[in-house]
Amino acid sequence: MLTTVALVAPASVLTASPAVAAPASRDGCVSSRPEPGSDQRVRICYTLFKPAGASRRAKAPVVLHSHGWGGSRTTDAAEFEDYLDAGIGVLSFDQRGFGDSGGKAHVMNPAYEGRDVRRLVRFVAQRPWVRKDAPGDPRLGAIGGSYGGGYQFLAAFEHLRTKGTPVLDALAPEITWWDLKQSLAPSELVRTEWVAALSAAGLPSDALPTGVYVSLLEGAAAGTWPQGAVPGGADLDRFFLRNGPKWQVSQGRRLDIPVLFGQGATDNLFPLRQGLQNWQKALTDRARRKSIFVGYNGGHTLPSLFPLGVQVSADPCSQRLGSEEFGDLALRFMEENLQGKDRGLRGFDRFHLATNDDRCVTTRSVRPDARFDVADFTVPTVAGPPVSTRIARGPITVAGRSRLAADVTTLARGNRAFLALAVGRTPLDARIVQNNSLPVRIDRVVSDKRVRVELPSVAVKVPKGQSLFLLASPLADMFAGFGSRTPSVMQFSDVRVALATR
Image (cartoon, rainbow, N blue to C red; front, side, top):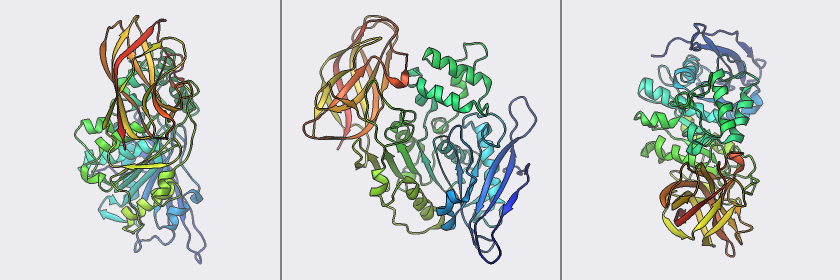
């Protein structure tokens, strides 16, 4: 059972004149779990929008909404006009540590943000105009991107953990994560540009616990994942242990509800692979048959200048599925799943992925199904130009995960190279497909050591006259300043690349 929600801020109600029905909004806060070492309960503040005509006799479903990292809730009803016009209420809230809410951000820890969303669900369930499937079980969806996508998985898994079923009936998370550590520090090499940006975004509201700030700055300075060695710092492995779907799944939980995924194919913080892992691991087989995966060119998109990438922004797959953009597709998804309307949705149990030239590829599987032998190559460490080696000549279409296996020889300690897939006419003009690189890290001297690494997941149509290349670089923008530690080379031989082809 959920505990009683205590309102700790006055509510203000805006209504139209009795002659004209109009949406109404209400501001307030609920009381939630105190911060560690305190007995003062934390306020989690919201704005609740009630659609015109919703009442005890004409009940309406609700969607939860929340903001990205460093943001705050939406208080303008015009931003949710389409939902309100469709007869769906909206509760937008400030997450712990941001906006009008108190406390510190624990970055989707079930013990804190999990308790917060349970309080908000309880509050929604107490509204007499909200449609319910059972006592305490409102008809409920969720929308939002990035940090505002992370709370959706947390909310669904938290109610699955405490009640045995997820109280949310449909999710539409965008550009969010499966595993925060894997996102922030693949191979324990920090994506320094993003860690610095996220730390800066949390400073205005002093959102993070002090020790976490110290460790994030340590990671940005050292380029490796902090584990609490610096005085005053935090063990980020411990801090982020439970903060995402990966941990929930490790506890034996999977979601059995429809999910509309929106993931950035060009996102270089929470890349396409993060969304694919959520699809493959966080959902049951039955849920996937009612779900849709859309990859668009967008998201967290810092430009890739070294190695050079292609900057694109478009959503051709939402258009192929009959909506102008992902937000419109999410509304249709909620209307079908919360209201039972037939909105003509299609493309279930499929991946719809935007390519680097803004076309849409639809596929049933994103698993690598073709293997290519690639010529041996050598990457300079510390500095030097990228090295491009041909994988295949066009025309070829790749949509999904990619892997590399190779024998690696190093001549010094602290070796790092950054691998990507690139397209061009020649090795000299090849550009990264969708602005993502992943590191290979070998910290000791080795000879012909067989390594297997994940390459960036991509969607690309390589036309005739161009080729798909494996691009290896001693440096990469997202890992600025943290290439190899000693001038030398890394030699790759017996190289095989596995691709998801169509």
